[in-house]
Amino acid sequence: MITRLLGLVALICTAVAVWLYLDLRTTQQALTGIEAEMSTLQMRVDADELFLNGKIPDAMVLYRMIDSLTRDSIQRQRQQLSNQYEISTDSEKLEMLSRKLESTTALLRAYQAQKTDQKDFIVIEQTGEILELQEEISALKEKLAAAQKEIDQVKTRRGIIRFETSKNSAVTYFGDLENGKANGTGFGYWKSGSTYEGNWKDNQRHGKGSFTWADGERYEGDYLNDKRHGYGIYFAKAGKYEGQWENDMRHGEGYLYEPNGKLKVHGVWEKDKLVKTIK
Image (cartoon, rainbow, N blue to C red; front, side, top):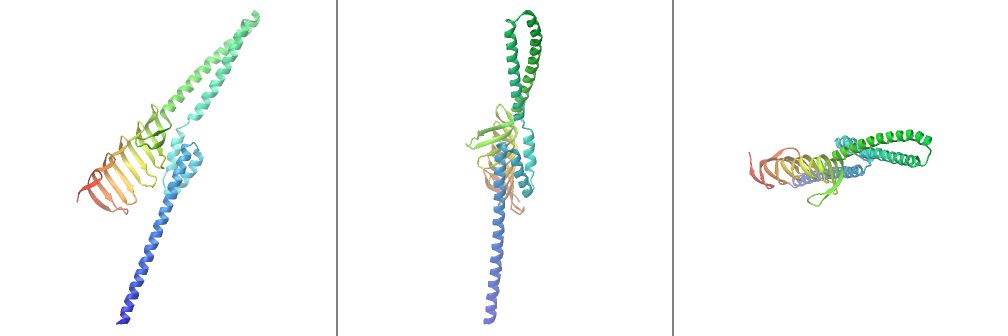
C-alpha cells in the first residue's frame, strides 16, 4: 500500500515537473518572440526616421532587412514614394537657370550702357551682339517659367510637411498635397513611432488606410475625420476584431477572434461594449 502510494506521489511529481518544464519553455519561447518583434518594430522606427530625413539609401537597407524578417513589402512601398518625390533635383535646375539669366541680363545691360559712349561703327557691331543676347534672355525666360511651373505642380502634387493632429500629436507626412495640407494618398509618421498609410483629407486620416501602433498592433479599414468609422479590422496580440466602427469605437455587428484564428464571439457592439451575442 505504501509502495503504491509512494509510486503515485512520484508519478504526480514527475507530471508536475514535466508540466512546469513545458510551461517554462513555452514562456521562454513567447518572450523570445516578443523580443524579436520589438527589435523589428524599433528597426522600422529607425528606418522611417531615416526615410523622412532624406537618407533614402540607408532607410532602404533597413527596410530590406525588415522585409526579410516579416515577409512584408515595405521597401517597395517606400521606394515608390521616393521615386515620386524629385523636387530637389528640379529646384537645382531652376536655380541654375536663374543664375544664368541674371548673368546674361547683366551682360546685356553692360552692352547697352556702352552703346551711348561708342562711335557709330562700334554701336552697329554691338547692336548685333545685343540682339543675340536679347534672344538668349528671351529663351532663358521661357525655360525658367516652364521649370517654375513644373516645380509648382510637383509641390502641389507631392511633398513633405509636418503638422499636429487634433490630439496634439506631431506628425511628419509624405505624400499628396493640396493647399499646403495632406490631401490624397500618403504616409504619416507619428513621433511615438506609429505610422499610417492611406487616404488623407486636410491633415486628417479620411477614407481607407492602415494604422500601425508602435507596439505592433494594427487597424486596417475606414476612417472619417481622423477616426475609425465604417468597416475595419483591428489586429491585436490578444486576437482580432472584424466589423463595424463609429467614432473610433467598435459599434455595430462584428466578429471577435482568438489569436489562433478561432471565432470567439459574433455579436453587436455599442460604444466599444458587447451588447448582444449572435448565434
